[in-house]
Image 1 (tube, rainbow, N blue to C red):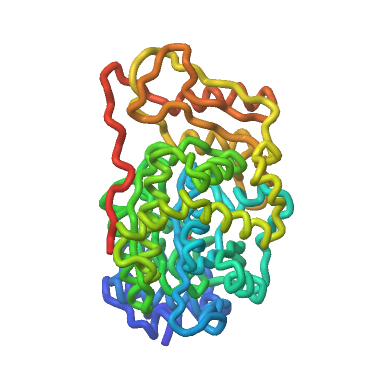
Image 2: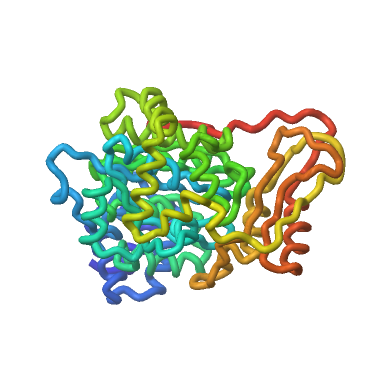
Length: 437
Ligand code: URA
């Protein structure tokens, strides 16, 4: 087999075999196939696409390029371990609430998460607002905590699907990131390496998301569901709105506080709706609920009876976090300066651009412009008005939390520019666009 023949076959629009894909990815990750050939194949895939079978083979080949967690050995036969994955958005703190709800019902949740990059935040960064909380866990620690606490969140390491990391770096500089089969296999190779039996995907759509249109989001969701099923996983996907930020808080400690309030029954309506939907799907896939609606009712009960909150506290303590800070959120990092942005006119909020609110949070120091940047956990934006809300001139639209004056002033302007107003009433957009089973 020769790499050039595989590139030419895809260039000419033919379907590659699983053996060809495996050969190419193995050669690429071992250094036998050079970057320029991998980039050429990525471009051929960009133009020619892939069948579901090819995308599944690519996922499996990238998965095999690195370590895989073996969770089966750690549990009695029949135990289902569930995971969730979001394609990333602004104000997306769902894992922080969904995972303890589900785990509190005896369904183990083992998750490897990333740090934020660009305008999307990362779960790990949010949890690192808690003093002492650590995510660099060995495989043994990860499995032990999953068994003992039923909930663990570790950081994604370079040992997981390393071929994906190498290919993504090439895609980033060759204009081949936005190819559906490449995105789906990239996400799924890392997800499958965690070893969960059931995965619920939260595919975001809108101006703050990777997928801008519903049709694109649906194609990506369906492909990832097919890839997962192709390797024997139970799968579901929720397509949810990311035109405006999710919930009200954007920024690491601010989002953590909102997740805590949600676990204590005081969450914002849209965020709670998504949390219950995802938890319902996880409980159903994990065999704890007869259907997703019953799962949602069970999730709601775990919030009401305080068990989800207690599971969160137990999880924080297990990973070395200072529980007194989550018990009393005024002990979490907080910004020196907090100022409102005022509505410039009377009317209704027509838009709050999630990407622009995310960018403002990055500029405040709450996110990374490039990998490895240090972040400020305290800063961010809390929305007082969202799409459909009536606003009055001079009343707060949102609050900016900043660590210095210059950034505060710049962020207030940026945040105001993210808002659009209408003189007519506006209906709030649907949050959940579709659930795919
Ligand atoms: N996220 C990933 O992990 N990979 C992609 O290709 C796109 C988004």
